[in-house]
Length: 491
Image 1 (cartoon, one colour):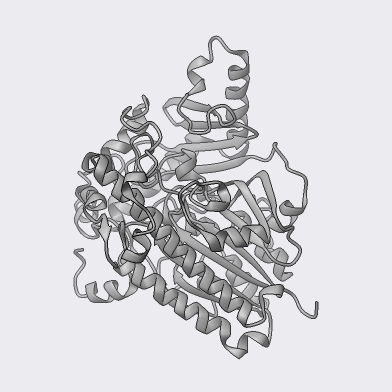
Image 2: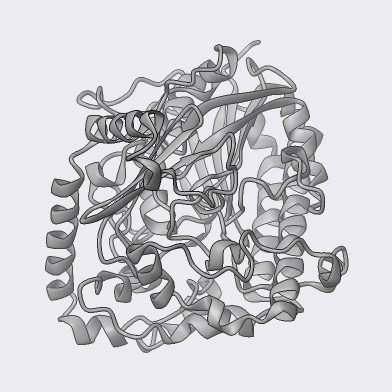
């Protein structure tokens, strides 16, 4: 090989890990992601640093946990510090471009790119300020929009994805890409709601044949904090069975549309003669509950929300392999530096990431800990998830934990923590789960610090009333929509 490989990250938004043919889903059609997995490695136990867009994208950029960077929530976006892996690559002389959604504070910050093409950042440089009001939450009046938007048609999000895809094709086919190794971060927004799906994709799925959500009709889990989150994000109140089936058809249709966009991008890479010398990583920022156990969208630690799809392919990555080692979106920073031959910044020795190239070539490691945390809207306390082997432990500050055996209970319907008195194996797992968590962070200290930072942020924005009224929306407007809204703050 005459030069270092190129590095291409393709990230979608709100794509749950099981909604791919290559993950064994019986309904969803994802031929392009299936083909990518066939020529690469799938990571079956991949997690988001936080089941919410803004904090996750900050963690992905920095390669560090949310509780380390302090990007707690949807109103505390990445501002260019700490230095991103994109900036590390760019400062080492590599062209680094973003195309599509970033969800950072602003293009005026140095986010690390040589160029940002069609970037979507948080609204007004502030984001979703309502999410800061965890101690005194208002009614979330936008929840009805999720069900209300279900149907056939185009949306600003699907139009935006087509623009992102076309821009990616143009960029990849530019002869300038042949001059030196590059890195690109291509960020699509589907299948994120609104669940309005173009007809050609919606028609792939018959609502009458949709799979029912996990625990459909059984009500919410018996846990105070989970019920609190569900009462704030009360999406489920607006779904009957027919609307739920139509929503799933639309979500799967948007997933197939996104897969088609991925296929077009990868075809442009191949047609330009660069596929054999490009490491490609496909991920999503978090999942979507899609009605499972009474929840929609994300915010919770169930696999459908905190788990993410993750596929890597290209030079040095085994074909057709499935890895069970726990991985995380924080591993992408280490992967980028590994592929591109760039050293990390001094002082980052304690970052959690490991190169996916190395993990793809190593034996499975059941002892590596998966981790996620949530400190955003709707929650009244911090939640923390650790995963190792088949065990998954969820810690809620001030509330009882949850414990799941994913081997015997993959849909997480049996909270084994309730068996602690009578089952020594459960007792041992609860102790081990808390030990692993406290090896990563002190959850009480982190929880207190998150609330303190959010109180300070509320005051900076003008107080609680300003946060309730300044930026109210259900999903971030596209760049073209934001341009139209700049004359006034109300959305």
